[in-house]
Length: 200
Image 1 (cartoon, rainbow, N blue to C red):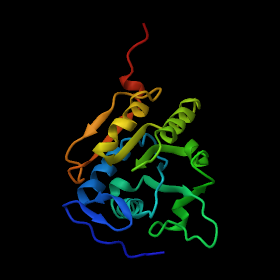
Image 2: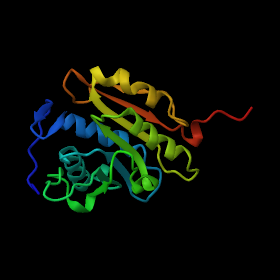
Image 3: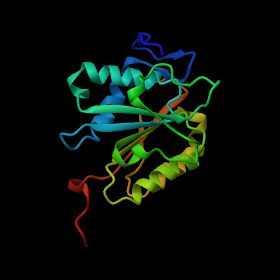
Image 4: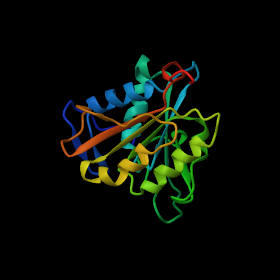
């Protein structure tokens, strides 16, 4: 486990064990977005599905632990379980913030507690759809925000599963979010009770 995180700059940079570019701006932007998912005094769990090396998630958790605006946030990375002699893919995120599933067909049991979902360079639109459908089927679901991060070239493949997510509002494309020019961030949110139209 690597414990000293590489320093981020204001300009997005690439790192060897992460598909996504990282920057201070990205960390700030994600913090603002997922903080809006917090609607109570209890911590909001941000579930990162397919967290890989855990570098992004470790930077998020480090910032939240050090700054007041993140004091009510906690990240948990989800990856497919590996068996010896294969090495775990996680390198950066402390074990207490990690969980595993048996395959892409299995949803994390932490979904029931998640206020936000984070998908970084996902491979399967169907995986996102399964998470969103499972959350929609639970009346007591806490999920209010979903973030997709990936290359613009992949967006056409994934747009429909976010656009058609039951119970969520329209897709927001976040500009100037601290990514390189060929990457993008898309967000969907559940309308809050205060913003729902009155019954007809």
